Amino acid sequence: MKNILLGSGLVVLLLLASIATMGCETREEQIRALEDTEITVRNIGVNEFSSDVVELNLTLDIYNPNDVTARLERMNYTVYANDVSIGNGSFEEPVEIPPDEGRRTSTNFTAQPTLVPSAIFSALGQGEVVWTIEGVMYFDTPLGTIEQTFSENLSEMDNITESGDSSANGNIPASVTEEGGQ
Image (cartoon, rainbow, N blue to C red):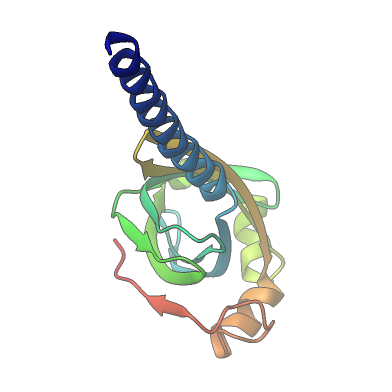
């Protein structure tokens, strides 16, 4: 009788252990899936570009192609104009992105004009700036924060096209919705 009870207890223990392991595996799969989240720089609006201040507004589309909700906690990035770094910025407003959906959000970026060479001012005046945004997105998951790097280029010509019609290149999923930004 003791052996049957001990055997039954062992079976129950093994079943519980395998169920617990499956739960962890599912969480780890979810974390790996979040690494596929995509970011697209939709538009870079020049609010002010003078010898006193460099202020831009970045419009971003964040798309979650996965079957789990992605929660973007924050993002740190560097802005380049014609391959010249003009400064660093951050986005600190959490954004929930449901499975197979996207969110559009924006953030303001301010740089010190002393870091911007005169050639960039000249190129901006002529509409010949290629913007590059490189950074790291931080996602909140059940097992902690995961990081995903990104890099996006946007030329002045793309910017002009995009500002008139935000779906001009057809890459925006129909499920992208607006989110507030900084």
